[in-house]
Length: 309
Ligand code: SF4
Image (cartoon, rainbow, N blue to C red; front, top):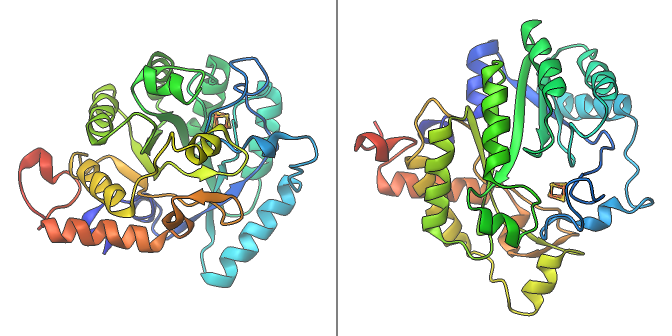
């Protein structure tokens, strides 16, 4: 079972709030400074840039997304507590007044216990951190999700991230100084990287200090530069076995008190080109658990030299 081997976010939330808390993923219509020239142009090589075209993305009003998210959860569970997950693109990329309006709208929903805000490390000015810290002081759950992907600047350059490790260190420390927990996003299988890079990135992130981690394999999706590179044979995606092995290695090297928000990620089938196994989550999660079971290890085992108890 995943929770026997990995300290999951679901487990952490349930222990803290006494019941299951469900995330409602939102697209608040933000864009990205790595597209419009503010931080860079062209976007990350793996990002589906077609989504940025003016007619390609018209998210429903937040209220509708919240209602439909809650209805979907009600069909599956009797949950009554939710976390608003501002997921799409750069969710701190707006004037702080506009951000507050959007976050407040989500927080006003019955049963909403807080926010998870996904963003780039170079897009969290002090005013935004102060706003998020304010919500924390009101007793709300707030998690700042920072996309680092790799701690290697040459890798970040290769995928045109438009920021380096330095910006991550600054944002992560500034957030945690204000008591805002950070969840760090890492990608396994970036061009030019192997298992060594992944382990080094994890070591660096843990040395800096983080509260949570999200792992996912690099997806090749349509309408990206990475898709061209893949078609030309310049990028070879990971096999499922390679990913599972690396994910297990990273989990074993992560202290138990760091929370795993995700051990894999999927891409929509209509966009996914490769690897084909990235169209479903649970077979990959189950394979990671099976690999840890086979090794007799769990999260943190490699740090104290013991197997799973
Ligand atoms: S992956 Fe994120 S940071 Fe990169 S271009 Fe897309 S939205 Fe921007």
